Image 1: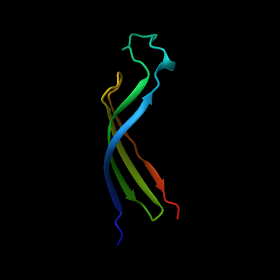
Image 2: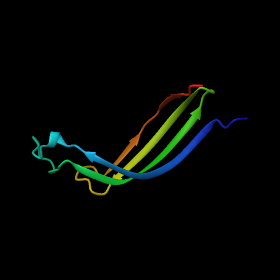
Image 3: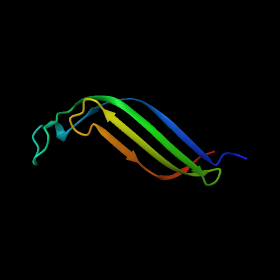
Length: 88
């Protein structure tokens, strides 16, 4: 019998460019001063996949990011859930 669930653990580097407020450093509200810049850090990923049939499953991904040099959110957690269809 085939396994009806799948678990994935992973991670790696995260590199990108954050573009903030169309390049403006002044905000209309009282906020931290932040400039657009390159960011770097790491991410971790955990995903659960529960098969309903051979073609469909329910997936629950959870991704976490940590950026060492970000002026804004240095860490972000992105949970989700949804159906997945496998084309054969």
